[in-house]
Image (cartoon, rainbow, N blue to C red; front, side, top):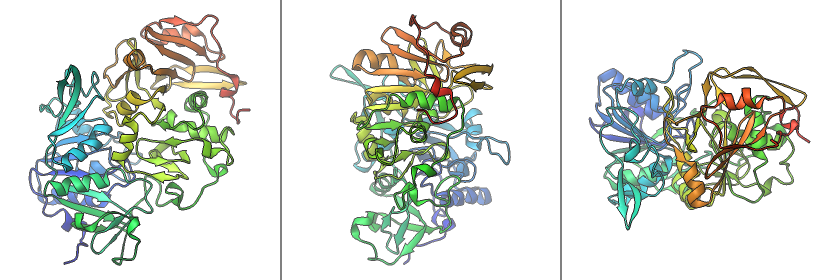
Length: 526
């Protein structure tokens, strides 16, 4: 009996109340055809109902590759546990994702786990252990004392517990069964042996499949092509066909958002640095330029979304990284691509011209082991107690992604982002900066709405070093609080910095150094 089926047949036997898990990293490795088929089945038949969905990472872009938004339907989705969420405005409809509406209106039980936990938890499911235990997240939004990673009032169950062992506190994530796992690969044979030779990421695919099979569940694999059994070298196959039940073929599936296919993301061809896109002259570019001065050769460096992801591209544009020295810069993201340059925008998570790609569970072993010494991450809020928030603010519920694991375990941290948001407009002229219109939302808040990571504790207890880099000022986080260490040329310290904060920094350097003028010039730095 052939394992190759239509997507509608693959989802036809999913029962009411099942737990369905799916891989996906924004648009990357998202089995969109299978998720769409499940959403279509519910729309047409009203079944299945009351499903729990487990997404180790935010799956789909909610626009062209809709991913988790295909199944964001009242009645179909009872509960969702995800490592992150996406909330873009669809340019065609002007609407936010349906999943975000369900969360805002408390129509579903929604939880946002740190991605390190969402990846490592799968290993515990696979080996039938009671659960996953970790130090990461104590004192943060994932801690039951601070909300237990719940996004909605209806999320009443304590999916995370706090344990004390030998006088030390840990977070414990109890396991439960996975009934169906949806994965995506490049190629299958008729037996189901899977390879990822032209995907930029593997992510949680292997862990999901093993966990589901250990629970007596099914594995559905979406692939681009089918080849004859035995055609590939065994070393290419990452998941054996014994662990795959059904195969859905989609020869036209997008590689990721806005990218039908590009071998530069998996090392199939090499893209010259001169062919990389130039970052527009925005506050993010200034931030990336200043933050890039903290990057060191031969130090494994990990980058988060936003201005942080622009750092490697800006370094190439400004000539810091060249074809001759690029091998001296060791760049990665939380999703397992190593070498080359981290991509930004919708292509974030993968690297251009990578040298190696590891799976998601292995990558968080690297992260939690403290091997990524330097981390550049975004921030949505930074408060008077040196608490940083990226996981929940205003009406946004993005979750933490890999932020908490990365921030906890890196030695040197740079938090990047504009000083204010919602309407900020700036002008650059001759190496100086001018605020044309101030943003409505102050990001240096008296108290953060969500505790994603306690920077102050990391500095005091583990000797971390942390900077906050914005387009107009730089701060150092110290055990006593923030110290203003640099300000942009043309900026009035009182009006443009101190008056735009809800709290006063602990200290302002006197004299206060100026940020380098070349950061604000729209041409390569010298």
